[in-house]
Amino acid sequence: MPRHLLTGEELTREELLALIERALELKAEPLSSRALAGKHVALIFQKPSTRTRVSFEVGIVELGGHPLILRPDEMQLSRGEAPRDTALALSRHVHAIGIRTGPDGLVRELAEHSSVPVVNMLTVGHHPCQALADLLTLRETFGRLEGLTLAYVGDGNNVARSLAILGSRAGVEVRVASPDGYQLEPTADALLTDDPHAAVDGAHAVYTDVWVSMGDEATAAERRAALAAYRVDDALLDRAAPGAIALHDLPAHPGEEISADVLYGARQRIWDQAENRRHAQKALLEFLLR
Image (cartoon, rainbow, N blue to C red; front, side, top):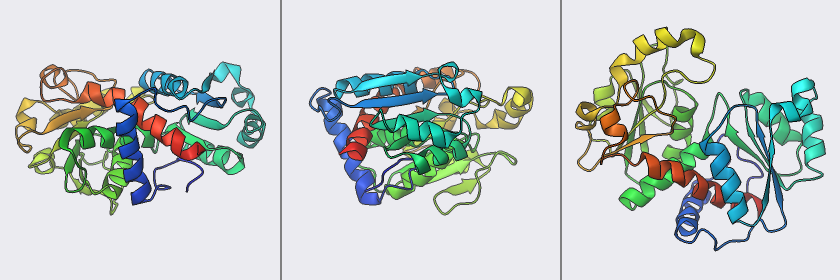
């Protein structure tokens, strides 16, 4: 059993599928588990958050635990303390650590020196907790994961990478369509193309993310121009399989990466997906702390 969740690759296929099934149970009965009773979880937010903070904080409370929110100005990390020292100190007080930050190396260093589980709540390279919620959304929509096809359209970023890793492990075919210069690195976990139509054809789910993420503001105009042909709208969604759903990890910018008609329409499961962060993360914390 893994001690940490840093990229998603720590989970075996069997562990991943069991975690998704457990998340379904916890969604049906949100207060049925007290797995974190008497336990404390430090949540470090070096990047702003809405869904990550709310879903983790509420989920930990529902499991009977105590979430300890730590912002940059409240930690010595922001004043140059070594991640190793932070990990050693926090491990004496809490039962798990979550961190939302930029560098993947910071999360790996915390995990290396922590004696308690460390969860990657977002880095520039990976977003595994989001991918868990995405798989939960597919499972509850279609009743299965094996044999589904998910098309990700847009910037080949951390979300696309985590979908490729965890989606393929769960039996989902992941296709990633991005323009030149924004493509995911070649990987056996996903089919890569620069053609959004080819990616979406016959897919069960069509997924997108913002074109200008945190830290990309300086190149916003360039990014919007490069990604303009990758908008998820009704015309693109019509190319997918009958009954296909639209997904987005949020926040969304209607009119850019997704049309308002899709974002708020009948074919999306985006708001279920946002809720499912809580249930998937509760299953993950149960798993890591058992």
